Length: 433
Image 1: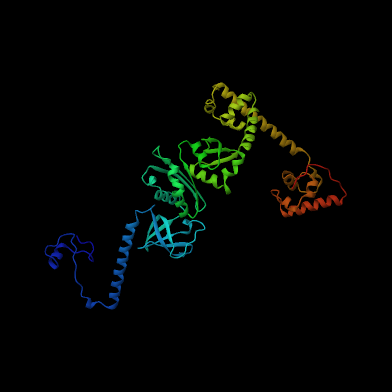
Image 2: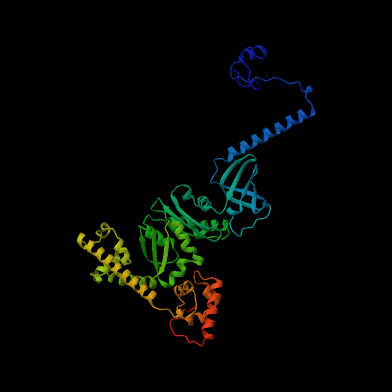
């Protein structure tokens, strides 16, 4: 059945006009008399042919590169276009976007550049090959190129973290116990790692041995700092790392760089603290736990070792969680949690009474001709005496929530009227600006 009169004919017509042996699906051609075609028709035919050839070329290029994502490729710098680098790959061009370049890298026309194929975008203008030099996988591929053991699968790259152009960390694991993964990546006299560093324009690279033990992995990731202790909080998915006081700045790194990279590498949020700070916090936590009625130092220490740091945490703990503590029966766990809750209720009641007493205490500001609303805002903001208003700057008063510039003018007028009347002020608590 003929569905398109422009491109199809029936078998009967084909056999009658073209080929007596024509079958369904055969392609037939007819020679046109070009003498009847004008200049415009010829030009149109030429443009169509050229366009079809270009489309075919683009199709060939796309087929050539479509399976090359993640591969390293070399090219020649052509030019900069709005910060993006145009790279000649031979048969086609690629683009190295500004966001995928390493910071502070500069190229001139004719320079050789190596990148990794990040993506291939098949647009109407042809396939656009996008390169990267800042992606973590680019570092992976460079090591795969320089270290045969990685290419052969003997050594495995487990994780990579980068701040392109500045510093990187890479975790490696050997599937052969006789091969040191770090030593293989470093190479003789550092030859292998130096080749990667030179390609990345001096980017510092820390190579560490991967381990499935998370505390050990985190401690290694923070190298070159020496870690004293690692505390894993599974519930909140957080890790606290304790280091000696003289190792704190090394563990954190310049602008927090070392701890950020370690966190990216391990996939854990990392909180680094010095031994002295950790000991002070531990001392404070133990004192808080000892304040729970009915428990002694030993029980408070037991709670602390189990990870409890406040009375609130004990009060909120599920009974099943408390029962996991060695030596704690169901009755003891229930009594402990109830004691913590009673203690908190008592503390909250005492605080509420103190707040009410403060509200009922007459304010020195009652002696001023001020609107009650403004006076209450000042008291709540810490300005409870006339003396505190006298010594306050306008910006101090404006920092009080709800106090406007008109209110400040009224406050100033009230205090001036007070002194013009010859009154004296009482001494009371003053707010320190």
